[in-house]
Amino acid sequence: MTHSKIKVLAISGSLRSGSYNSGLITAFQAASHDELNVTIYRGTAELPFFDQDLEGENIPASVLALTDAIRNADAVVISTPEYSGSIPGVLKNLIDWASRPYGASPFAGKPTAVLGASPSPYGAQRSQEQLVAVLNAIKAQVPRRRASGWPCN
Image (cartoon, rainbow, N blue to C red; front, side, top):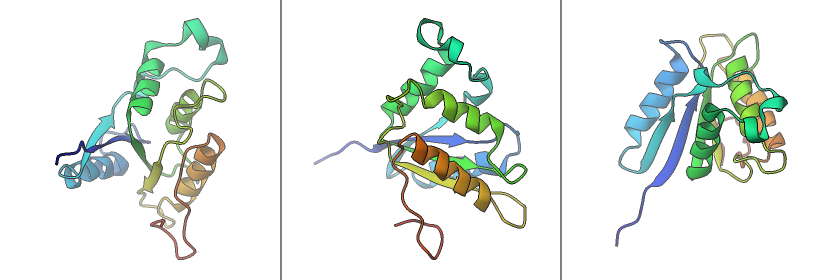
């Protein structure tokens, strides 16, 4: 009996060419190729700033590609750096676009895992916590953090 691999969309919250988080996503893809079908989303830099005036008939093609990629995935993995104690603006912008249309976000009910890497003394702990809060607000299915920390059960 054969079964199809779980389709995972992997998103890095960084645009930097030498990003630790993009490297983490690439390593995740390489490590799980036998078990999962991991696609790395590479369109973050193409997304315009979120603007409600661009919704509906005016929605940019890059936003449609993003929301289609999320809808077509069985699960999402996001790796976030920590900038100024929070998630990067480009990642928040991506999530703002993907939270639309209101009440019908492609993230709603989507199993979504959060990773992070940062050379700061806190690692990416604060950005991961804030990212989880944002994902919960748009009804993504994020595993709960155990009292002992990550990973979640």
